[in-house]
Amino acid sequence: MNTDRGRDWFDDARFGLFVHFGAYSVAARHEWVQTYERLSDEEYLPYVAHFDPDLFDAVDIARTAKRAGAGYVVLTTKHHEGFALWDTAESDFSSPRACGRDLVREFVDAVRAEGLRVGFYFSLLDWHHPDFLVDGNHPRRDDPDAHALNAGRDPERYRRFLHAQVRELLTGYGAIDYLFFDFSYPEEKDGWAGKGPEDWGSEELLAMCRELQPRMLVNDRLGIPGDFVTPEQYQPTEPVVRDGRRVRWEACQTMNGSWGYHRDNLDQKSARLLTEMLVASVSMDGGMLLNIGPDGRGAIAPRDRAVLDEISEWMRLHRGAITGAGHTPLAPPREGVYTRRGDRLFLHLTTWPLGAVHLPGLAGRVEFARLLNDGSWLRTSVSEPDAEATQMAPSGQPSGTLTVHLPTQRPDALIPVVELTLSGDAAID
Ligand code: GLC
Image (cartoon, rainbow, N blue to C red; front, top):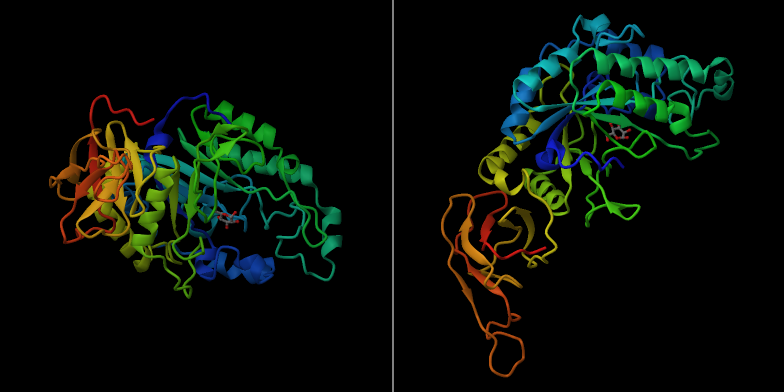
């Protein structure tokens, strides 16, 4: 893990927007559709031939991300199907050939113009490439002659192609802040060898990233340590530790289980749930990369936009409890979750208690309490233990507990937040 860079933008951002877009968005049945349905190149071709992203508006995506309080945006420059969204000299399978547009260029320009950090996702797999060895994830793995297909394939040639494409991305688009390689699967599957660092040439790839973009953060999916780890579709419940050291992490999450546009999948998570996941990430010193899958024309799907609008409204008022915030070892009350930024402790109330919330260990350590949504002062009190030395205050709370009194009416926010300003000498970790 490269932890020697010191704290940087990524540690503060905490929230990013992931954008999965490609020819699979036209198929509209999950970004793995080609392999789930064992589609041949010919069967997949119509989605490429009719790739017409007339509503792909990078400026809209960048502004939507910014409004939602995201600090960075990550675009799938190429997914496992192999269709590149930039003007690659290495293949004809690309958006400039299909529709005359370098979508990576549009994306980079728009994201930079909004003052956000630029992230690339890049698939190490490429199901379209003739030298990529058929394996247990490949669309042709069930062909009658599947194993024979590998006879003429040259993995070394594939590696050279892979490195050349990454080089194009890291030299053609100015400073890139973040790179999400995807993914390594060294285990054997259904009689097929997996693929990992040796297959990708991961050490050389990472060295090339360091050389071409020394400030760029690289994830861990080359199968060798990178700058941050990437729990996928689950939330760590502790700060993440590798080899005895805390590491940067970012949970990537979907809106509905699919990364690419999946028209008929209506399993949408609510804005409230996603916000809880974001808060949970920050409380464990991580971040969240929330995905949208623009539709077949490249537009942000209305249901995704609706969720992002709600998150934007929450972030407008509560961003201070997310951006630049992190973990505190202090145990939260059962009604909520803590995040902390400098002398501010934020209590995110996932349930609304009746009248008051009791905060063990905070008596005498809080200078001011308010609701973050409207800045309204909240009365606090400390009930001292009785003389019997039971260590329990009359309220039934352990000694040292601070009580924050709350209005009966729950504020109209996805998650109400109590902001506590800690007194000068009240270090809590
Ligand atoms: C997985 C999937 C992929 C998705 C990615 C996002 O590795 O293969 O479809 O893009 O995770 O993290």
